[in-house]
Image 1 (spheres, one colour):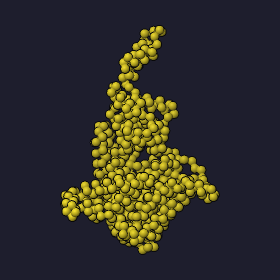
Image 2 (cartoon, helix red, strand yellow):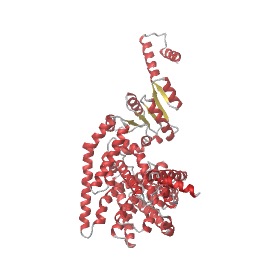
Image 3 (tube, helix red, strand yellow):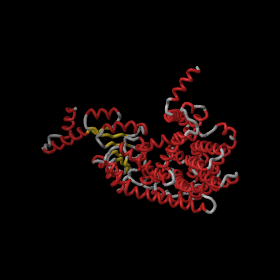
Image 4 (cartoon, one colour):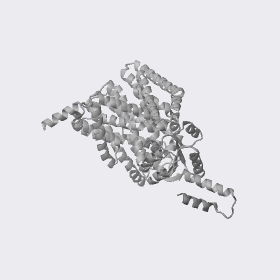
Amino acid sequence: MAGVWMVLADGVANISPLFALLTLVLVLAVLVSLVLVKYKQSLLVGYLLSGVVIGNAGLLWLTGTGRDDPVIYNLAEIGVVLLMFTLGIEFSLGELRHLWRTALIGGGLQVAITALIAGFAALFFKFPVADSIVLGIALALSSTAVAMKSFQDFGQQNNPGARASLGIALFQDILVILVFLVMPSLYRGAGEDIGGEIALALVKGIAFLAGAWLLGRYGITPLLHAVARTRSRELFTLTVIGLCAGVAFAGGALDLSLALGAFAAGLVVSESIYAHRILSDILPFKDLFLAIFFVSVGLLIDLPVVAAHWQWVLAGSAVILAVKGLIVFGVLMMLKLPGRPSLLAAGSLASTGEFSLVLIGKAGGYRPFDPATEQMLLVCTAVTMAAVPSLMRGSKPFARWLEGRGMLAAHKAAPPAASATQVIKEISDHAIICGYGPVGRALNEALKRCGVSTLVMELNSDTVRTLKREGQPVLFADSTHPEALDLAGIMRARLVAFTFPAVGATCAAVPLVRERNPGIYIFGRAKYPNEVRQLLALGVQVIHDERESAVAMVRAAISSYERPDIDPEEVVREALDQGD
C-alpha cells in the first residue's frame, strides 16, 4: 500500500501545480454545488464550501501547493478583475437616473447607518481607525450576485423589492470604487496628511476614469465597430479580453488598482450597443474565475479556529442579518415602498457579500487582521450569503403575519419609469426575433402592430444602433450563445423566430432554447428539403423558402391569365402535392 502512495506522490509531483489545483477546484465545486442546488442554495456558497473541504481535508497535497501558495492568490486576483469588469458593464447610468432616489437616499442611508454601527463596534473592540473604517464599509455591503440571482430564481425580477434592491446595490457598487481609490492613502496616511492623501487619490482616480471614458469614446468604441463588422466571434472575444486586461494594467501601473482599471474598462462600454454581446462573451470566463476566487477564500478558512470560536460566528452572523435587514427595511419604508416588497428587499440585502471579502483581502495586504478575526469575517460572510434565499422565501409569510396583526401597513408608490436596459430585463410574453433582414423587419412590424412586445437580436452593429435610436428593444448578441439567450429573457418569451436561412446556427440554438423554455414556440427558415427535415426533427415550425416561393409564383402566374374557371388556390395545392 505504501508503494502505491509513493507512486501516486511521484506522479503528482510531475503535474503542473496550476493544472492540478484547477482540476481539484472544478471537480469538487461541481460535486458540492450539485448538492446545494438540490436544496436551492447559492452556488457561490458551494464554491466557498469547496475551498473549505480542500483546505481542511488534506487534499492540497494532490496539487503540490499550500494555502499560502501564490498560484491561488494570482487566480483569485484574475477573478476579482473579471468581476469588476462585468460590474462596470452592468453599471448603467440610465438605470441610476431612474433609480436615483432609491440609490442615493436609500443606498446612502443604508450604507451610512450600517457602516457607522459596525465601525464603532470595531473601535470598541480596539481595532485601529483604518481597519474600523474598512470593516464598517465591508459589513455594509451586500451580495448583489446572490440577491439578483435569487430574484430570478423566484420569478420576482419585476417585484418593486427587486428594483429597490437594485438601486441600493448600485450605490454600493459606486462606494466600492471609492474605497478602492482611498484605501492605499487610508493605510499609508498619517496625522494631518491623511486628508490630502485621500483627496489626491480621489482626484487621480476621477482623472483616470475620465481618461478612460475619452479613450472609450474616441478610441475603443470605433475599434469595437471595426471588429464587429468582421463578424468574427473569436476576434471580438479576443478584443474584449484584451480591452479588460489593458485598461486594468493601466490602472495598476498608475498605482490605483487592477480592480479600478477593470471597472473603468467595463464602464467604457456599458452604454454602448456592444454591452450585452460583451456580457454574453465574458460571462463564462467570469463565472470560472469567480468560482476560483470563492474557492480561494474557502481555502483560507481554518475549521479548528472556527470551531474554537463557533459561538462568535453564530452570534456575528445573526447580528449581521438582523441589523442589516432592519436597516434596509426601515429605509425602504421611509421611502414609502409597500411593506411586502420592503421585507423582500431586506431579506435579499441582509448578508455581507463578495466585495466584503475583496475589501477585507485588500486591507489584509496592508495590515493583516488577527487570524481569529479574519476567520470570523470569512465564515460570517459564507453563512449570511447562504441564508439569503431562505430569508427571501420567508419574507412573504412573515409579511402576512405582520399584516394580520396590524403591525405592517402597505404604502402605495408609483413605479418609476424604466430605462431601456430595464425594459429588456423586465420584458415578458414577448417574441424574440433573431436577425433583422427583410423577413425579420416584416415580422417585427407585424407583431408590434398586433400589440406584441418584441426583442431583436442582431449582429449588424449599424442596424443595432439604428434600432436603439428608434426605441426598439435590441441586443447586439449571437443567438447561439446561451448567455445571450438568457439576457434576452428566453425563459419569459412566448416565441423565438430565427429569420435567417442559416440552418446550422438555428440547429445550434434550438437545444439551448428548449433547455431554458420547453414550451416556447420556435420558428425557423430553410431553403432545401433536407434542411426542412433537420428542423422538423428538432420541433421547429419551418418556413420553407423554396415552397413559399413556389406558392407565390404559381398563384401569380395563374392569376395573370384571368381564367374564371380555374381556382388558383386549388391549382397551387395540386402543384405542391405533385412536387412533394
